[in-house]
Structure formats: C-alpha cells, structure tokens
Image (cartoon, rainbow, N blue to C red):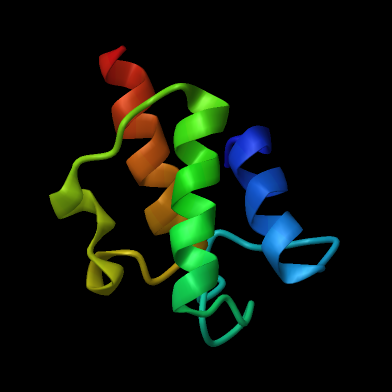
Length: 77
C-alpha cells in the first residue's frame, strides 16, 4: 500500500492503522462526502486527474480499491 495513499485515507478516518481489506464505509466510516474529498485530495497529492468513470462509489469499496486506482493513474504518468 502506498504510504501517501494510506496517509490520506487515515486523515479521513482518524485511525492510526488501516488494512488494504478495510471497507471504506463499513470499517473506516468514510461517508459519501468524505469520499469526494478523499478523491480531490488524491488528485492534488499525486497531481493526477481521475476520470469520471473511476469515481463510481460502487467500484471503491475497500482501501485496496483506492490504492489500485492511484497506482493505475501514477503508472500512466
């Protein structure tokens, strides 16, 4: 798991440790507004622009889903 991504997610949860298998909503309590803010912070932190189709909340269930998304965009740049 990318340390920057982990740090950003932890900022929204208040938890000191998170697991790639943690559910963003169920385990970490990130609501829909928090997800939007998280995605904006990811774009800023990694200097990427996420495609609208990648912002579907049904595809971003676990921490590992967010990490995979970031990895895909940063590998392309």
